[in-house]
Length: 179
Image (cartoon, rainbow, N blue to C red; front, side):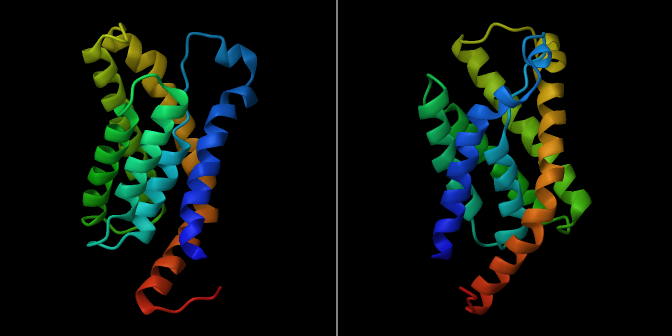
C-alpha cells in the first residue's frame, strides 16, 4: 500500500501543476513574467533528501517517469522534462551525500535543483530551436520568477513532507510498517 503513495502524490502534483497558473492573479500571469511551477520536481527533491539512502535512487526513477508524463501531457517534445528532471535530481542526490538533510539544505538544494532543471529545459529548447529567447530575457523574465515561486512551494511543503518521508525511509530500513 505504501508503495502507491509516491506515484499518487506525484500524479496529483502533476495535475495541480496544470491548474497552478489559474490560481494566480491575472495581472501577474498576463505580464512579462513567465512562472513555471515545478511542483513534481520539488517533491522529488524532498524524496531525494529525506527518503533515498546513499545507495537507493527511487527519486531519480520517479523523476524520469514523471518527467516523461509531464512531457506527454504538457509539452510537444518528448524527453525534455524527463532528461532535465532526471539529471537535476541526480545532482541533488549527489549533493545530499555531502550535506546533512535539514531545512536550510532543503531550501538550498531545492533552489539549485529548480535552477538546474529549468536551465536544462531552456538549453534543450534553445538548441532544438523551439525557444528563441535571449539569455538575459530568460533570466529576468522566466528563471527568477520560476525559482522564487518554487521556493515558496518548497517552504510550504516542508512541514508536510520532511518528517513523514524520513519516517517512511526509517520504516523501509527497519522493515516495520505502520499501515
